[in-house]
Length: 534
Ligand SMILES: Cc1cc2nc3c(=O)[nH]c(=O)nc-3n(C[C@H](O)[C@H](O)[C@H](O)COP(=O)(O)OP(=O)(O)OC[C@H]3O[C@@H](n4cnc5c(N)ncnc54)[C@H](O)[C@@H]3O)c2cc1C
Image (cartoon, rainbow, N blue to C red; front, side, top):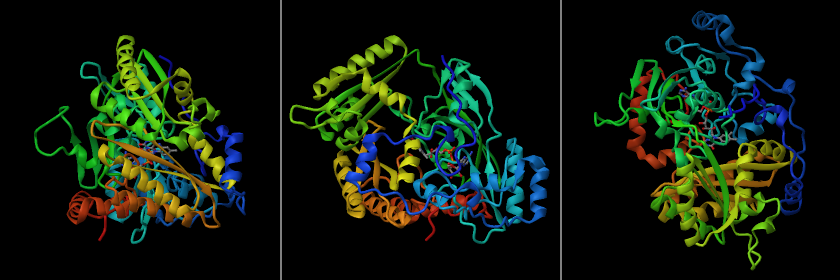
């Protein structure tokens, strides 16, 4: 099997990905922007690297020296380059701030530990000196998970886990692998490919996000219908906390009390630092087949996806775009045209596995999709999607530069609530933004429900941060009111704290604060993230 390409490093400091792969806006998108949305170029150009404003580094030299004694001097960096590249994550507000030259949330130093023991010692030192620690994986958080509250701390350290990048062992009998958390997904896939294996985790942030970040934020990849969510893949882990080390997971399932893995999956660095993961792996697929289907409406497509999730072996990749996303995503929207002129809704179904298994599942899925009203479009739409699956984030940078605000948000609910949730979030976004383009897709399905993923494009106002904050608040309120969860796979961070607090209630918040106080009595781990404060 071909090894995955490794992404260029470092990532663009003010945007997404490999700076050499900046995407040109396609002509139809440019036209849509001006004609439909009234987008105009922003008043000021984006700041250059040299124009970025950094606060003075606050860490006392004695603390820096103590940290250097743990990791080696070359692995403690307080230079501008390291600080800027570890400032916040990659949400649109994060990018807007960086484009405006605002690095006020920069850490005072970046520490790169080389082992579990070094992580544990850094935590001990930081607790002693009351220095906040932000575990840093790929830096792709889109929920403020890398923006700590610094008030009351002697300083902030970004704990970059990039040196913990080994495949430690493979157990081909149990089909598990022990991997370190700083591995970026393509690095992990390349190492596993050497053993004929794959994780099957391909989020859109695949090129830069890390295994530790996937576990800490409960990530879900584009092939979740076949391989599952990342939290389903974690069978064991090692965690360093300021109070000591935990080794969790000695069997795939256990009745020995509550599952402590669940305390750390989704904990976003607030309870401890994941220093090793035991993950379920799969044989690398011999066959990959992607295809497109058309449904007349989003409702009809949704019903078909539900049946696939409930009645048969679903495809490995399964996604349904609503009418707007289908129209915008097509080079020639008329390709999907029905006699009535309606562009319909595109379903992408991808099958991966052994040849016999793929053939069998394709046949089963095809029978069901036809029965549900689907029209087979052949391989082209599926392959086109697969080829461009990691490109959209590059387009976001070009849209921001052109003067558009573009951002995504996501949720999930039970099937019976889904039409109501879809309408509620769309209406909230339309109400808050005037006349934006609101697109949606379903890309993670379960027997009992599914996720909804919205992409919003609108003309930037003079204050795009306030503009998006208002839209996001309205969408969050609509999600809570319509019975959805505030996040299916992006996590809580700081941006979703209020809605998360409402979702888990006062007692839920108390439980989290109890765990936090026990594991991190000095409160140094990612302060301000995840834990509701009343
Ligand atoms: C363009 C784009 C597309 C995206 N697409 C998807 C998608 O398809 N699916 C999806 O699920 N998400 C997606 N995301 C969100 C993001 O990539 C995920 O949340 C991912 O899991 C973050 O991984 P990371 O390594 O970048 O973690 P980071 O962003 O570095 O960290 C995320 C959080 O986890 C904590 N953390 C990181 N490593 C550790 C560790 N070892 N121990 C403890 N805590 C840790 C951090 O402190 C932070 O709170 C996308 C983001 C972007 C920008």
